[in-house]
Length: 242
Image (cartoon, rainbow, N blue to C red):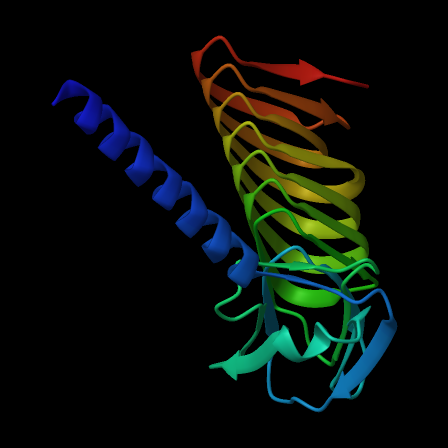
């Protein structure tokens, strides 16, 4: 009886492994290695949400337009749709797309107000101008924005991701929950509210007022000569990096 039970357990374990392998094979689609490109016409959005391992490039432009580059047999599985004022880019029901060529998505849009990255992908952009720009990152991805000119930059990292900002803003409201990093020594701000919960790290450049909140072991490094108001719970610190 004991031998029969062991055999039964082993048999069930093999079935479980085979079922998982079949599921993984089905949900992960491999590219054919042939470079492909497709242009899609979608309009009426001021924000972009990327949910996948995509390299998304934001291009401020007078007209809307989306160009997708990847292995040609995978492009049809990259889903682009508008919900409200937001363009959502994902891979539908597929868990992953294995492309030999990088999956690049170039988004042309007249007005950029909201960017959201989920996962380990990347969003980059140049010369974005906005009264208010909200940027969210969840996971281990990268958001790199250069040439910013905003009235308010509102940025939040949840997880271990990284944000890099270059340019100028009147006000910056920067938050990290987790172990992420915000590099903004090249973003000139007049006023900045910096908040870290966890072990994250933040670099800011502030002219007038830096209001810092730290809960945990994170550090906030600043350049410039602002007045500094710090509220720290834990072992974190606000450090002058001039």
